[in-house]
Length: 260
Image (cartoon, rainbow, N blue to C red; front, side, top):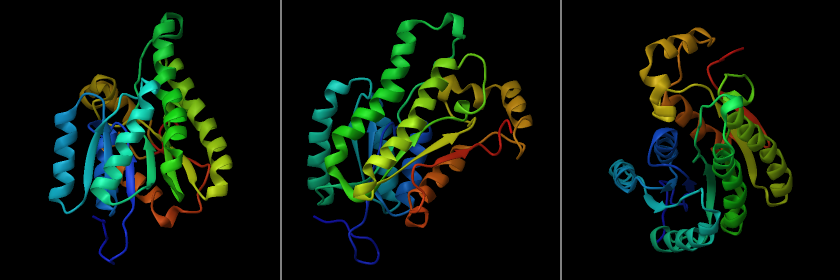
């Protein structure tokens, strides 16, 4: 079974990690809306992931969901095998075109109180996972494909309590440039987005649900409001399109001009 777009050509397939909730879900929806088939991963939210698949398919797209715990790099080989089976069985493909390394966590703790366990967890999920998951999946990424990593505006501006989190995001920005350089011979473009504060359930939903926090951030943003998930999802779809093909090794901040 092959998947074709409206012009009769084989469509692209995108893998989006952490797609069952938050920004990952929104990214997956927009990428699917742009005509790509989507394989979204989830850690424990199978019902949410299945609902996303149903939503995409009801809108005329193609999607699948696979379980993946990005904190366990020892499982990446098994995930690669499951992904290969899904690509071949559901989409008639042996390779995919886009990898969005979205899955991540945030821990808010002052520098003086951050524990080594918390620090190691942030490193493992936010930095080690994109490195080794991309490495493991690299043989299945088509030449001329895309890799999109996810940083944070906090790698540029500071907010007390996010020193370790921001350090992992600074690391992913450096990693992005090296990946772009080393994968260039296969014409694989690698970029990184840096969202500002967005109204999601991230961090317990503090930006979305705490009016005081929301107002402070809006006041520090040039466009006068806090970001919405669609602000990021639509940008991701644009960045992954052929119209953005000459961008490589780039950091694209999507913050509405926060803390300029």
